[in-house]
Length: 219
Image (cartoon, rainbow, N blue to C red; front, side, top):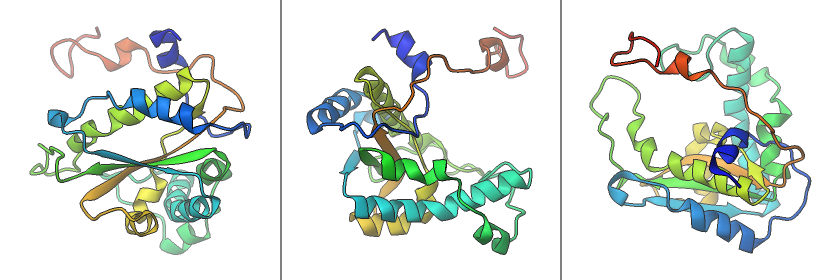
């Protein structure tokens, strides 16, 4: 399909029809996604394609605590999991919070869940000495994740980038046999969308782009 059309209609897909996603189609999706850029072209990405339901149930269970905190903070008017604003919700309230189905069921209802990892031994993190949360190393993995979603859209499938399980990364690593030097970047459930977005809503360019300086005139 047209690239711009794909970019404007590749939304987060959390509900699936149950139609199979054959291995040859999944391989084609990943074969094209692998051309995403990475720092120094070091290509430190590893992907685990998980179809086993018992394993996916365990991944959903590991995702629940992160989703509980996310939901509890939203209910408390907070920006969830925000590095600049500490969580103000008591632990007992978080533990009692019901997990919205849409936060974990895609891991169970999709045809496959991709566990996408980044080898930190080859990743560049130029912001590692700054007094803030690091984001730069994500440049070596998240373009690949986006390519996966674009390629899936082109094949008539869809998915969503989820990170709730990363809050329990040691458990995910133990479950999937991931070596210590790898970071879990995302879990991406993929399947045939129950409905496909026709048009996404985003802020206009003038709201996010300025000339010359952060406080410059809108483009």
